[in-house]
Image 1 (cartoon, rainbow, N blue to C red):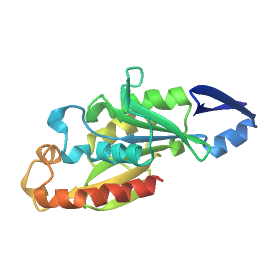
Image 2 (image 1 turned 45 degrees about the horizontal axis):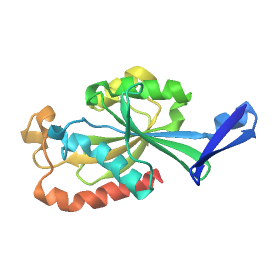
Image 3 (image 1 turned 45 degrees about the vertical axis):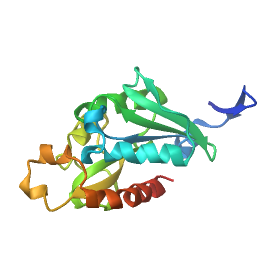
Image 4 (image 1 turned 180 degrees about the vertical axis):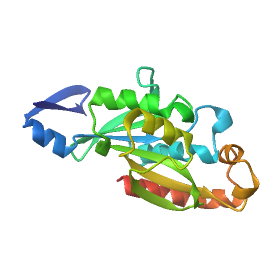
Length: 202
């Protein structure tokens, strides 16, 4: 099986080919997909449900990935680069949260990925604000984005869960709460929370 790595050098595309056994390619996880969940559109900027977008935005900038490019075939904004010999694909679905699985399914099929090579970053209503947890597999916990993903690719993917729960959680309808903006106090702690999630992704 041939794997192709591409490097941009002096504006010339250099292609390097390595022949390796198929089993090694599967075990090596040559391609990693990191998806931040959220809703596109200015109305959703800065909302709790969009913290997945915020994390992959920060990760892209921190690691100097290329500018986001909208790819209609993936129903997502995409940025990709190589890190330590591995191709890393960042994605922000444009489907809106509730249909995120459509985008991830197309990416999984195109890159021929196993679920172990897929990381989903999302808000978690059951965790206190600022909490960052990594989890392998599991249910949706009422998150419609995760419900869509599970229906499309199964549940055994990695999740980076970002807590958004606060004192208003029990006083508001869940749908209204996740689409509300972070409070002034929360915004002062948001950067450190996003940075912590990025460190887990490294």
